[in-house]
Amino acid sequence: MLSTLRNRTYRHLFAAQAIALVGTGLATVALSLLAYDIAGADASAVLGTALAVKMVAYVAVAPAVGALADRIPRRRLLVAMDLTRAAVALALPFVSQAWQIYVLIFLLQAASAAFTPAFQATIPEVLPAERDYTQALSMSRLAYDLESLFSPALAAGLLALVPYTWLFTGTTAGFLASATLVVSVALPKPAPVERTGGGHAKAAFGARLFWATPRLRALLALDLAVAAAGAIVFVDTVVAVREHFHRPAGAVSLALGAYGAGSMLAALLLPRLLRRLSDRTVMLPAAFALPAVLAAVAAVTAAAPGGWSWAALLVSWAAIGAACSAVLTPGGRLIRRSAADADLPAAFAAQFSLSHSCWLLTYPLAGWLAAGAGLPVTAVVLGAIALLAAGAATAIWPARDPARLDHVHADLPPGHPHLTDAHPAADGWLHGHDYVIDRYHRHWPHGLAARAN
Image 1: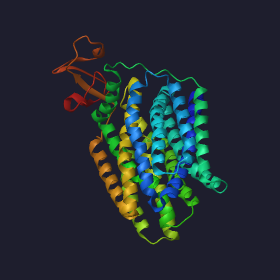
Image 2: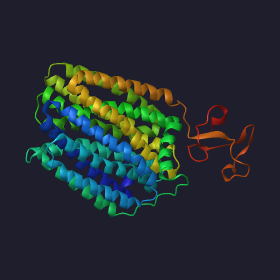
Image 3: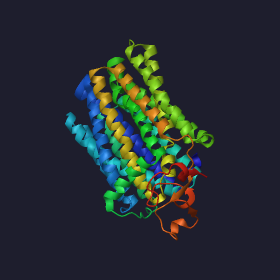
Image 4: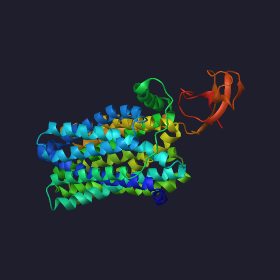
């Protein structure tokens, strides 16, 4: 897996991602404790609302940036967003009311919504070989997992020395370091996009790509399953630790670290696993594991707090992390299979926006349910959502899903450049290639027009 780091550009980009994620992880712990300081036992409601604001920023901003990504120099965009995030993180320690958290979170996450899809679309351009890109996806997942494991541990150590508000300074430093590393490399120019209609049409294309491609529709359903399970971890951990188990602030870091440990273990195993098994074979069972774990969480949080139930919660958080990683890591492979190179920025922006629409539903639900009905009811409701989403993904995603399809063009004239290898058929011109939705293929073929080759 580490062989991808021989590529200097990718090495610097990976380092930028990892350092920025550590800073973000410190902010996650600090934000939980800030919400608890402001709202006490109602901290889950404040966090749920703050994270819902985060998702609004993601859903609103990412498609617009994806539409304009081919017009903006990639490095300039990434650096500008890192500097914006650093400035906002520097202001977070000074808030004293919930509404101030919401405003700053919106600004911070709007910048992240611009940064992340552009960053994701750059990686397959830097590492065009399929094996290298698969390893890079696992490296990226590993970076998220190391952040989930290392940042809480680092936060716990720092909390013994300084107030939690100082953790936001680490977030600022992480974003500044990320900007420095991005500046240090030359990035590929975005591929020209041949599409009319301006920015609005480009933004709409990304969403249409997802709705028209069966495997990508299934990916969105899987994103909902992950969001249902992940929401209880990111929103309700602080309340579970402080209110239910009556443990100190450092135990919040331990619980979040358990989630990261499970996710990291899965990310380390996935490259070898994906060489032997299809993405579908890995992702669907992992999605069905999530509602089972949430049922266990309901039982654990309904029981009286004790040593065994605390250990069971940590194991459950680790299991959620592992299952989420097994669903999320191959997602980039699905997007790459399903979009032309020039359309990757729009595709990743659409995935970023649409997947975070799922979190927009589950974050406030996890917060408000926990505050009003308790943790066991929250786990049951989110588990039911995860189960329905996993079932929908299974129904949507064909068991046989080859990249290459034979299909008929009825709308292109004889002699068209796209038909150089086609031959006449009853309804038009028949040929086969790796099939993606683009200007020549506006709908997914079915029946005789979609024979796998």
